[in-house]
Image 1 (cartoon, rainbow, N blue to C red):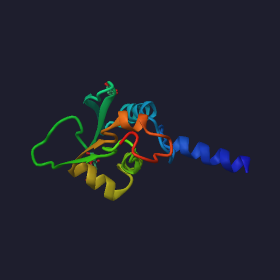
Image 2: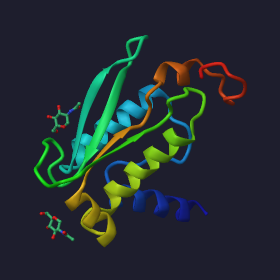
Image 3: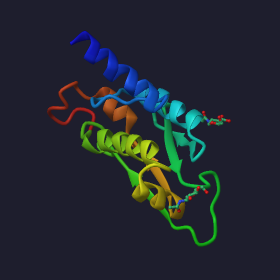
Image 4: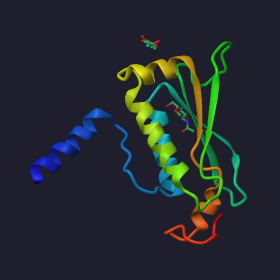
Length: 144
Ligand SMILES: *[C@@H]1O[C@H](CO)[C@@H](O)[C@H](O)[C@H]1NC(C)=O
Ligand SMILES: *[C@@H]1O[C@H](CO)[C@@H](O)[C@H](O)[C@H]1NC(C)=O
């Protein structure tokens, strides 16, 4: 059992330098993950589009063959998650989408074709203040 766990752990380390668990991540963890992705994969570009009311950065990760600039003829697509701070499914799924796209580029033909022909912008959380103020089980309207 221990050996199996060790193999899975090592396998994960080898397959990519950046790993993402399937769970909620708070604002600090999301930022750390996005910075890791940005530093690891050349086909990503991270920038802040401004600050929330409580001063948290609104990070947008761009993925694509030329992520840091507009290019004539390359369509752009925007995903926005977690507008209501206590409604978190979009936030979790967009992090998983980033994980899927970064693992698949240049190995999965569909992901490669997508990122070679489209510039994808992902705002994981539009409402980090709401997320941080909502109760951990996201019940009731606190943080919405
Ligand atoms: C993203 O990565 C590039 C290259 O490593 C670095 O120059 C840039 O400062 C990083 N951006 C952020 C927001 O961390
Ligand atoms: C995507 O772009 C990369 C980098 O230019 C290239 O190596 C690869 O062959 C391209 N693949 C597809 C399916 O367009």
